[in-house]
Each structure stands twice: as C-alpha cells, then as structure tokens.
Figure 1: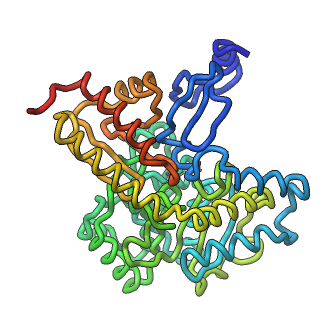
Figure 2: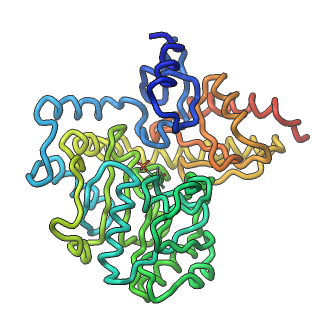
Figure 3: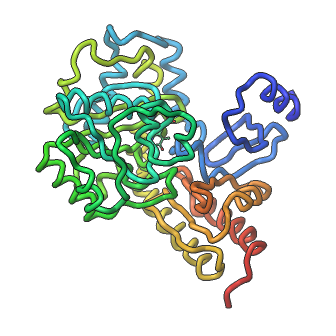
Length: 396
Ligand SMILES: *Cc1c(COP(=O)(O)O)cnc(C)c1O
C-alpha cells in the first residue's frame, strides 16, 4: 500500500474521531520510528508515554513471543501465573495493596469510581480538579473537568465536584457530607503539564484521613518511571488509597490496573466488577518484562539523569527565545509553555524528523523513552532550536 491508499482507506472506513498527523509508520526501535517511505524520526512522545521503554524493546518482545506460543487467553474465573506474578510485582513497587486488572486508563478510573461508591455506602461525591483528564468513558469523562471533552455528552454521571488545582481552600469549599473521595493527577498531562504542589498533596492526604475519604491518584500517565520514580506519588511522601495505571504498564500492549490499599481492597467483592480481557497472560508477561527491565537497566536513574540534562538544555533555550514562557514537569514528563500556539511548532519539528506533542494549545509536551540517550536529546534540542529560531527574535 502507498501512503495515499492508507489515507483513503482511513477516510472511507475508519471513524474520524482523531486529529491526525499524516504519517504512516511501520517500524520502531528504541526512540526511533520509520515511516513507510523509510524516513526515520526521533520519537520524543512515544504513544502518549505508552512506550516508556522505547519501541519494541527486545526484552518485552521476547516475553510476548514466548507467552503467545504457550497460552494466549484464560478467563478470569480461572487462575494463571503471569497475573499472579504481575500483581505481586506492582504491589512490591507501590504500597501494600491488591490489584484489579482491566484494559485501559479510563477503565481503571471507572473501577476506582465504582469502588468509591461501594466504599461510601451512600456517600458518592468525588472532588476532581480543573484541567484534569481521566478518560473518555462516561464516568471517567464526568471526572474530567475540561469543557472541550464533555461538550455534547450531557447528561454526565452525577457526583463530581470541581475544585481549582493546588488550592486547598477550594477543595474544602467543595466538601459535603456526601463526599467520598478526592481524585487527581500529580502532574496533569492533558491539562498542560501542571505539577501538584507538595504541600497541597500532603494537605489532601491529611484531609482524606480526617474525613475518611479516599485519595485516588491517577498515575495512568505519570506511572511506570515517567517522572524518574516508579510512581509519581513517591516524590510526594504520601501513599494513595487507590492508584490507577495503564499507558506504559504493558510496554505497548493494552492493560489497565486499579491498585487498592490492602485494608479496604476486599470491599469490592465477588461478582461486583469484572473485565473479560483484563490481565490476560500475554499482557501480564509484557508488563512483567517492563517492570524487570526498568530495574535491570536502571532506567529510573537514567530518567532522572537525562531528565535533568534535558531540563538544563531547555532552560538555555528559554533564555534565548522570548516565545518560551515556562519549562515545567518532573523527570521525563516535560512541558514547554509558549506565548504562541504550539501546533505549528509541532508540525515544523515533524518536518525535521522530531515527534513531539502539544497539549492545552500552548504547551509543547516532551516525554521521551526512559532509556533515551544524551546524544538523542542533543539532536532533539538542536531541532527545537532551529524551529524556535524561525518563530521568534533572539533575545540579546
Ligand atoms: C490517557 C489517560 C487516561 C485514559 O487512558 P485510556 O487508556 O486512553 O483510557 C486517564 N488518565 C490519564 C491521566 C491519562 O493520561
């Protein structure tokens, strides 16, 4: 198939729910992708952070290949070893907990919302935050406090109260005798790379303890090493009651997980929630390979190290280009806030072979693989430098 044939097939047969970039890929390795004309790209936004270990990491590929030739699927009314091992591994890396497996971030958050209602015994209100993103299914969408995602889908699911991010008073103002949980991302991804303040998160933890509320931390984007620790909550010195995971957990294959504090986990009992595909053998083997590779290849340390290096380089760019307002983020989850719309810049970077993203219209988002090298960073920064120069006068 030629490029244009692919576009034609999409136009004719695939629903047009995505804003698309006209590139057709068919091969990936590490931080590199090749399109069907064999042009190579440096991928600094691998699948919204799905490919935290880069494309087609050999350890993940081997694990999948091995499992797929032995047993592909077994339903959740039986047992299998990969799911048992993966749950134990996730708990080892996080906190004393039990895990429910599903297939996506939205599903993991749906599970957390359902869990809260059972836990609340009549209390059902969840406080969420401006510019949050928790997924596209109806309850997850209702928890997503951004108009552009919700418009046209009313009536939404009841019971979500929206507070200003990093504003404890706003949270307290939204408390009622029906409140059961507070749900947040510690670094808002789709909201523009907004980092939660440490004091704010500590205060939320205290508030949840005092009022018997669940602290639900959505680590779908921040989890699995993205911020230089396995989970972002580990930067804050708090433990959530519920953590949700997806994106990078499966190394490119679809998996979601709700991780619930051990003392309360069994409240959601037999028959109360389920997923046909959740935590199948192949995907669990892939996820085990992801977690083991992060450890074996010391990728958390690398993410911290190269994250600092990249921040340093971007700060240098900020000193030179007026259009850069702020650089923010943690580890390898980095936002560059601009004074001009980011989309044309993303397009120009792509022309020069660098894939990045723009979130919240004005924020360029970089989330390279955790095993990205300094050399690859230098190349990406050079391209950003070239592109920025065409958009602004240099400050002298
Ligand atoms: C991507 C994302 C989701 C939704 O995940 P899906 O797998 O697309 O359903 C939820 N929360 C956060 C923070 C995300 O970044």
